[in-house]
Image 1 (tube, helix red, strand yellow):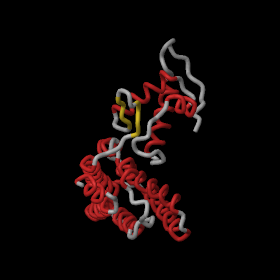
Image 2 (spheres, helix red, strand yellow):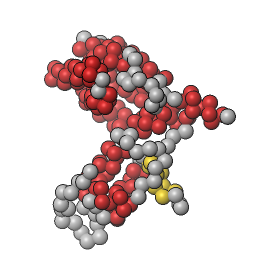
Image 3 (spheres, helix red, strand yellow):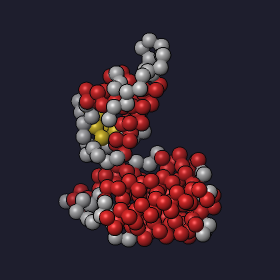
Image 4 (spheres, one colour):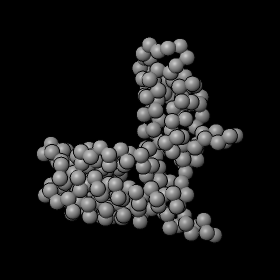
Length: 231
């Protein structure tokens, strides 16, 4: 990944806002993609080359990401990708359940016809991926479906709170790699969410999303991890 757009003119000694924002968004997306193991050390040499930024710009990006909880920074251990205790993971997933259910309810009230068509298209793509057994594309379409619901809710306060959650990192750490993907019932749960939005039924949308997120949470290895921690 190389974000090589040219810097805009800036004062000497100050990082370009464009370079900083590109590196921030690029590294944040990389972390949220789940492609880096929890607890992995992030090296400046590799990241400056990947995002085509100076060390000072990268350090500012890492400070921002540490403040937001995406990475941890410790003396003599450097900067590492975030890992979560079982208690932290459960707190984050509980918050996700509450916020995303509320967003689904608002989407049922406020989604435009164009937004509903886009949701239908994404769900059709998920159905096709499941038939073909394309797990990677199913996951991408799944993330797009949830993003579209957030946007269709037209509720900026809820959306900002939702965006601060680190649940993709929790899912990455605690997902069951031996389990079949997509999870049994996942597609049907998405269909129920969309039906509630299409029929403009906020209560049903809230309930369908809450059931979906709770089911996804139960499929994680949190109980197994908690048992290991107690050993």
